[in-house]
Length: 128
Image 1 (cartoon, rainbow, N blue to C red):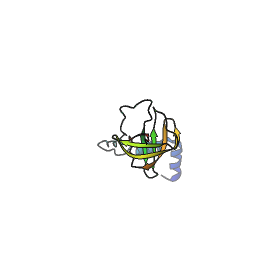
Image 2 (cartoon, helix red, strand yellow):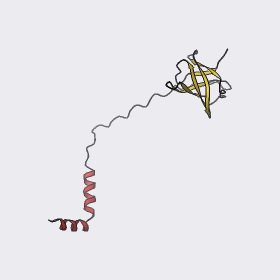
Image 3 (cartoon, rainbow, N blue to C red):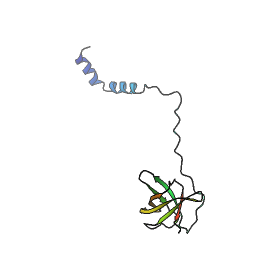
Image 4 (spheres, rainbow, N blue to C red):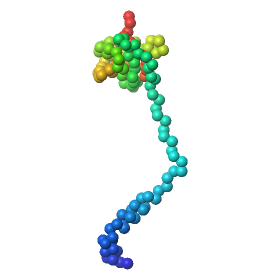
């Protein structure tokens, strides 16, 4: 079969190339066993209680390289920019933060003055 005859057949039957493409696309080997999904990352500890009408907040996330934290005050009054806060873990003061902002909704940012905060740590106004 010469090239001209082949082209004439292909012009009359345009569905043949599509059929060949579909047939070759469906031929792939699938794994015999399903691959398990990766485990989800661990979540921050859940708060089981929170005092209302208090000046308490919690560390939502930490950026140790840039030395700042995001604080969650979703049910309590946000601290003012410049306020100093005690960082509390298991009832013990382990550091100090300074509120720098910005604030959005119930969250605000603070610089790490001292200590190593972790997500879930409690913060309250610094007491003299």
